[in-house]
Image (cartoon, rainbow, N blue to C red):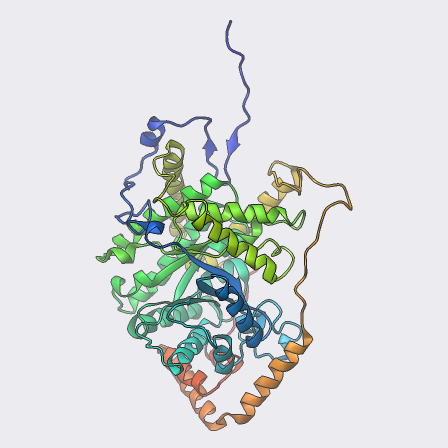
Length: 536
């Protein structure tokens, strides 16, 4: 009697890869690319950039935090540090992100709402009061006004006696992804890239251990891109910054080791792990192709925790489980830093309770689940190795397609990448709507109307914070040396007009207590403002 035939529905990952029911060594051999797996800590770093990975040192735990005034944010920083957090990831409010002062009419209603409000160096000093910058590294999640915020951070650190030659930290400062994914742009594309180049050059020469750019596939993915597009577009953006820096006369080994990446995690566990293993060796190959000699230049250093796009408003407690799996994926993927999303982020700025649950989730993986015991524990899996190879091929194909169309800067300037991401977002949402993409609590295993538990505490918006911020800004303006501010702003305008690196002039301006809005206004007068292209 012949065995009963089982009809299996095909399983196709977001990346377009069909998953077979069983994998073996023949699949690994058939999918192999020109790049080897290699050992951990060895080119092309498929298995991790360090030889012992977490056995020697666990990942940095860096929760995204910041709201209200610098005083409010400082309190949250200390709350997290006291509970074992090992890094800070700073959220800025919308006015700060787009270069507006808190008293600008366009800032009304947004001061301190989605992040910390920063107008002057005084705010930066308050935010990090009592934080040891030698023990706690800081990531500034800022893009359009990144030159100003990096300048403020450096000036604050120097004022407190830190040696800038040994100062560590990161600025997001990935403006190209802003045109694709978040829209907190200020200047047109070309001068925006020039400003990123200014920070790369300045840090290479004056703050060599600081990472001036964290290229964000994360936000491109959150905007709708699939995992292949996330990696491909991020690498193309990183290449654009690299090409610009090389054109300035920098050597690849002067700055490539300080480039970093911010990636997203949500979706299929094995697809996520494979995209990072493939991405790590592909990036190593790309940088080696630039002539890099230092192996550290070829490292794909990344922060990856969770993706808010994977969280749901429906049945929010499910997001605690999702977050735990995102953290597991991140650890299995070999990230250097983990910034785990909190379960209430689909609703609000994370409460202390939600942030603590995320922090404890990461600590449980380290201390109870054995995720730091051995390197690349999924390495050697027939499925994972095959999927890694297939992801590499897919990422290369998307990169080649964009390069053939004139490159990533041209594609972003014309809105082509935005259109691709928007289409992918539409297809995903259509899948959720028609049920072909399963989402627990949303289109499967729903609760009856009225029975769904939405017991989430909302973070209040405090109008008094706005009043305090405006009063602080007015006080700084009244007490500062106005003539010195005007002189510094004039020097900044001259540097921008000549095409010089604006970082030295910006640092002098923030030291004189020039505001974010004043500095941005000067640069706008030279560079103009970005107008988004319309695509139908």
